[in-house]
Image 1 (cartoon, helix red, strand yellow):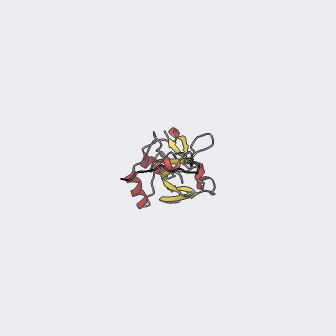
Image 2 (cartoon, rainbow, N blue to C red):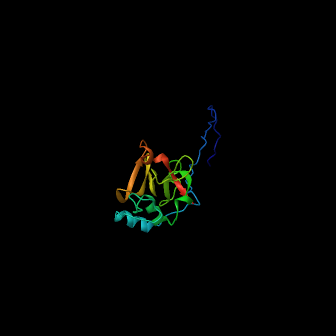
Image 3 (cartoon, helix red, strand yellow):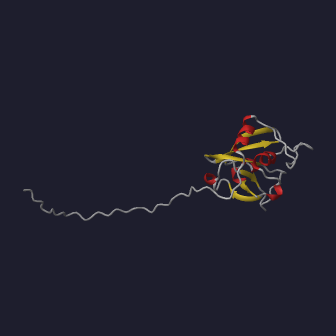
Length: 162
């Protein structure tokens, strides 16, 4: 027969301290408009140069500014309905892919005169990538990194709401 005898210890009981943990919010933003994924991919693949009657002109009458891509792929009809949403860099990981984004004036108004609009394609270290058309090229993927000036500065972009 085996008999267990209690053992005694001269050590103090140990205490485990658990640091408080904070969970990073990774919930996607809701209530956002998203663009047509398949159409956007085709426009990028073909380096399409888009025109839309509501887009501003690069040269008189061409309607090929950056907002032409957003009008064609995101089913919005006028920049006058656009409002400044969340800052892209502040909520980058929570923005659904193919969400329309743009630069806005400090008063929250989008202006095609010096502004840029495009379609969000994901976060990268110190910035993000997006589909964009400018007056000198068709639809392409552009990477914006911190340190650029105005339309080349990722912190100047916001989600487009309407």
